Length: 133
Image (cartoon, rainbow, N blue to C red; front, side):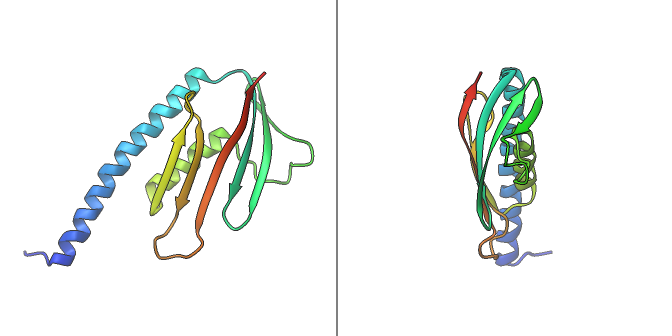
């Protein structure tokens, strides 16, 4: 069986994407492990995220119990653990994902383009104001 030039490049891109993703998935697993080892008992941070609109929520983590700033309960219930899951989902199914991590291992920011052919499906998340108390 002979592949056309177009089929060859299609299959080659899939193989490359799988290799690229497996390296990135390994990096994600390493960052999760690092975060779980370095995670402080009491900390707070701000998550700013946007897909169709932008929202921010302040998150408090006290001994593993997650609370959101009063008045922001209706906002997205994102936290560091849900961000790791969203990154994992993106690495499996998104067209592209760009991720940066902190020294402690948690994601500082990421941007996801879910589909190459869909306009305005890009999403971003940024963690700021991380404080240990």
